[in-house]
Image 1 (cartoon, helix red, strand yellow):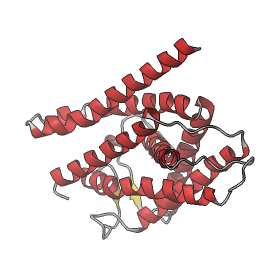
Image 2 (image 1 turned 30 degrees about the horizontal axis):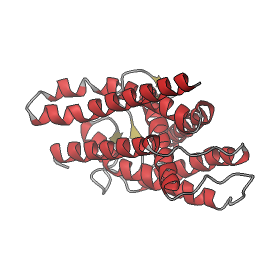
Image 3 (image 1 turned 90 degrees about the horizontal axis):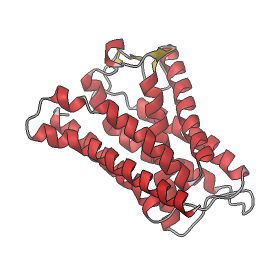
Length: 251
């Protein structure tokens, strides 16, 4: 058992280090004058590293099944939100589309598979950072044994604010890059403000579903120490990378 825990910790630390390196490397490469197309070639590796890190982190922090449920709900809810919005043009503040040449990996019902993965990654990251704050405050997650169900709404709001804070930079950057095209240019760096309200609502729904299921299951001790710090560092590095790119392209 001890050897298995040690191996798990080592794998988690290795995945964390590789992910950080792949997130920081493009910024350094751009600053030293390496062509952007070469820098961007690291993106698929970074996404793969992120998925591996999140799986290993989930296994170590709340258990693989519980973490898998959180990631699935984030991706599933995000997919249906995109599916509805692409057809009815209301959920995210306006009409938009995804140019096929900008999204390798294929589509499902006009939604890029990579976008579904982004929803999953972003949601789990927000969930993990919220949990880290709870752990640092010496608290525990609400559960049926102890009650405190109103705290589910507080955690859902935290998850929503954390994810939308990233999206406030991500969406303008990808709009300028042409990863998605708005029929009518929005007032927030080309993005309709309603887009962020939509993101917030989708994340809250995902969080209430995931944390509601968690509430009904047996209590789990929150990860503390290094496993709690890791998602916070990844979140901060991702935010820094997005701000760097926004400034670099002149937003």
